[in-house]
Length: 291
Image (tube, rainbow, N blue to C red):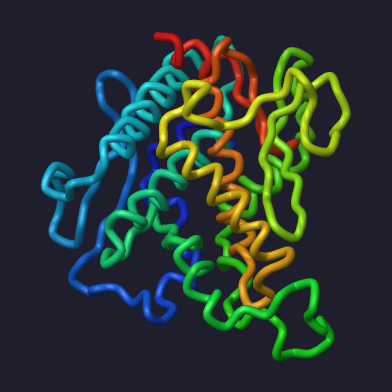
């Protein structure tokens, strides 16, 4: 797939997301926001528009970390476009990160219909918390009973572009460099535990001595620690605490791989980071994280 696809602002048109309007998360029909990338002299820049045209993001009062993440995407995409003949940029990684930014915006603008180049997104974690009112503990549920099943649509309906993007990422089966770190989750009845283990070591329960966690004491910002906790809690909820909810499959995987980008940006020393075999943070991200 062509890297310059990121400048085509309708590439996800046709994707449907039934979870976007689940009660009580209905949206104001007059509040629509599209996030897209425009070509600029530097390369690419994320912008906002509604049904009336370009939107200035300042009055939206988004928290600083959302703006920071948008600015990092701008630098990453611009670097990739400028150097695409010198290395192979990750189109999948760029798309993951931008989609996660759109989802991040929904968390802070819950009344808005927000889409990324035609892909409608929603705050799945808010749905997780909402569905706890009807929770059926996973360890006590009769999974053959249809009333135990999650009543929410399991996934988005994908258009051809999204299908190709995911298929290519799945088929690449990337090998994380031995000096990198891979994120793993340990889950028990009472806790979810995300840890990053050395890539040259097999998975182990509750980490190695030289593994690391995402904590403020170790230099990670509070918003990123919160994202890691939401990842832990979402899977814990699905596995044990709430058979009435499960993550939106595709969007959850995209957010998961985007989490690796932010972990890599703040971890010191800089090193490749992965949350799956689909994607790891390459030299471009590490170079920009240190600039």
